[in-house]
Structures are given as structure tokens and as C-alpha cells.
Length: 493
Ligand code: NAD
Image (cartoon, rainbow, N blue to C red; front, side, top):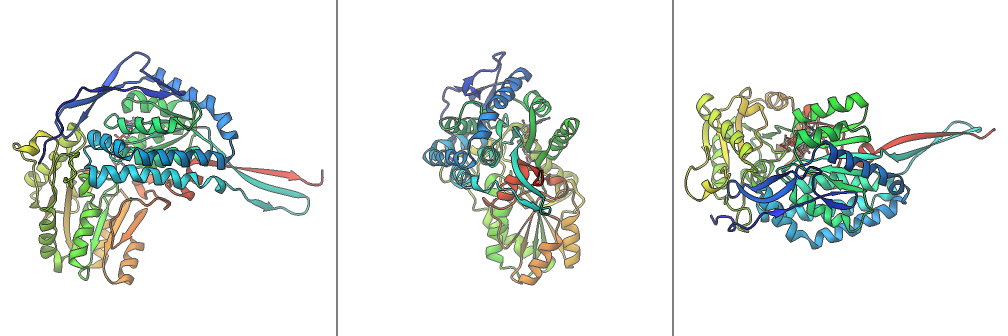
């Protein structure tokens, strides 16, 4: 493995509020590190507090009346220009993403940056879809509905695919006529700030604001701010619950995209070779398993359990874990020390306390090139029980647990025995069986015989504690970023 590039001087970043690039009011900063080289600081970023949040929300509120008055198609046109500029910046964005998140540039960071352009293009074309309805109320009364923006939207995003999730919020919120205060994760604010620079060239001042800092110091005052009229949050389920409680005090709507522990159900008739590739994709090993939709519980029919795990292990052994900036790396590093320790803790618990059998992987190497960063190799555990913590809790690392089943109903029962319900994957060549199972699992998104990432334009969101509401589609835009108003006219007046 090539070790990450030699040290360079950390950059000094500013955040984007009211059309200006500024420091935090009290001048504080926090460090952004690259996980490829433990603890190497790559940037100093403003560490905001409540006063900065207030400034950002007021800037967004001030920009709202003029922005909502722009015709929706014209708002959309600006997004199309942003999409073109994102295309032109893909390489820079990819390098920044790989550096701050640890996601491998070829398999993750570059595809993420390219998809961001698709997202702006998709929503940029939806300006004309903010339609209302007419309601038949007789000859003397006429009623119609309008789709109106909320006003200031607080968009709070995590670190795993930071600019993609930011785009899923910014683009539909803006085309619908809202203004936005975006808060990136303190682990990965740099590519989001770069995206803001691209947007800044096309948007009026205050329409998009990006505020940097920690969840407690920025996220909470943002969620509590009286001028915020809608919260769109993606992150951990526990944080989502805290935000929902804050929103309840002011009765403001919240869209939540939260965690998962998604099942993969493998029938004995599944094609071994293609399914092994698909299971690896669905588990998001290439993103170190750091995906909300990671299919991290694998239920394999007992008749094919051992041979399938052997096949899976043989394929995983070929994945190259290493420097995220190296084009040859299939997998990069875990985002931070905290996340690394959490993942390693689950691996240790699985082996030493619960007695799982390690099919491949295990604790990270303590020496050699991989010990220079937060690297964890793909890990698969067998002999796992569905009630163990490694089978129930979201590890958010490259750790897959495999559990055998004999009876289809039992497989579905185990798959649904979780408080999460984000995604599910079914592997079978028998389409009737596959669809029967797809309909029986509790998940917002079920894939049959594939394990791809979210598709632009498809309604996306979780069942159960994986979320509330839908985003990333026309339906998601209308549901999450507009409110309906009915206007009723007396024609006999
Ligand atoms: P997190 O909840 O710790 O943080 C997410 C964002 O919320 C960050 O910007 C953080 O600073 C902010 N935040 C933290 N505490 C806050 C508070 N009290 N009030 C307001 N904001 C606060 O999540 P994370 O560790 O950044 O991301 C990983 C989690 O995100 C995983 O659980 C993953 O499943 C989930 N996720 C879900 C989806 C989805 O679409 N369902 C997509 C990606 C990630």
C-alpha cells in the first residue's frame, strides 16, 4: 500500500454566510484530519457557536422573500449551471472528499462527486413540477392548491457521503423556493465548502449558507432557531430523535434519514458468483461499510452457507485496502479515530465476548503500512446469533455478520427483527419468491439481485427508526420542501 501524500500545510477555511466567506464570531477553529494518516491535520475550519448560527439563519431569512419570488423554472436554471460547474470540479472535489473522509477516490469519492452534478441537474429540471390542483366545489365555489416553500430550511448532514447528501437537500429545497442553512459534519466539511463555492457563483446572497462546527454547538442551536421553518436531517438515529424533540417544541416539520442494519436474504437458487459480488456491493465494503444502506446482516440458506461464505471470503481477500488517494485502492480508511475505535470495539466484542467465527478480516493490523491510518480490512463473522449486539447495532464499518436459515418465514422474521427498516436485499433467481420476500420485509428500499447505491429520482427513506419522510425524488421534493395551501373563492360574490 502506498502511504498518503507527504504532509502539507493545513489550509485555513472560512464558512459561507450571507454571501460572505467569514470566520466564527469568536475566531475559534477546529481541525480536520485525514484518516489515511492518523491525526494529520489538513485544515482549520471555523468553529461556530450560537451567534454564528443566528447570523446564518437571519441571512437565509432575509434572502427568502426575493428567492421565493423567482419563477421556479428560473431557480431551476441556476441549479443546471451549478451542475455544469460541479462536473468541471469533479477532480478537485474527489481529492478533497478522499482526503477528509478516507473514501477511496476511484471507487467512492469520484462517483460521489459525479452524482452530485446529476442531483442538481435532476432537481434543476423539476421547477415546472411545483403544481397545485383544482378542487370541484360546485358552480359557485372554486378552490385550488398551491405548493409553497417553508422559508428557512436547516439541512444537517453526516460525513459518509457529505456532498451527495448535501446535494439531496440543497437542490430540492432551493428549487422549491426555500433558502438553506447547511451544516456539514465536523469530520467532513471541506468538500461541502467547495460545493458552496460553486453554488455561490450562481445564487443570490443568503440563499445558501454553510455553517461549520460541532453537532452540539451548531446543530442544536440551528434546530432550535425560531426562524428555521423546516429541518432536513441525515445522521444517526439517536441524533434524529433529539432533533425531533427540539422540533416538537415549535411544531416544525422534520425529515429524518437515519441509521440502518439492513438484511440481505440469500436463497439457495441464487447464482453464487454474481451474488457474492452483489453482497459485497450491498454491504458497501468499498466505503468501509460506512453507509446507512449497508446490507450488514447476511441471512444465507443453510444448504449453501459454508460454500457461499468461502466464495465471499475469496473475493474480499482480493480487495485492496489502502491510501484513499491511490487510484488502485478499492477501500480506504475509516473516517476518524472515534469511528475506528467503535468499529474495532465491535470486532473485539464479536470475537472475544460473543464467540463469533471470523471468516475473514478481524482486528486491524498493529504494524505495517495499514497501521499508519484508520484502516480496517473487510471482516465477515459466522456463528452469529441475531440477538447479539454485532447483529443488532449499526457498526458503520466493514463488518458483515452471516446467519444461516432453513425456513423462508424464519428468514423474513429474523430480517424484520430489528428497530431499523432502511434497506433490504434479496438474492434469488426465482422472481416470485424474490418479490414475495421483498414485500414481506420492513424496509423503505428493497433491491432484488443487486446492491447499488441510491438512485437519483427514486423516493428514498426509511421504515421504523430508520427515518421519517422521503427525499431524493419529485415526491420527496414536494413532500419534504413544500407545504400546501388551499385557496377557495366564492364565485357568487
Ligand atoms: P451524527 O448523527 O453524529 O451527525 C450527523 C450530523 O448531525 C452532523 O452534521 C453532526 O454534527 C450533527 N449533529 C450531531 N449532534 C447533533 C445535535 N445534537 N443536534 C443537531 N445536530 C447534531 O451522524 P454521523 O456519525 O455524522 O453519520 C453516521 C450516521 O448517519 C449513521 O447512523 C448513518 O446510518 C446515518 N446516515 C443515514 C443516511 C440515510 O440516508 N438514512 C445516510 C447517511 C448516513
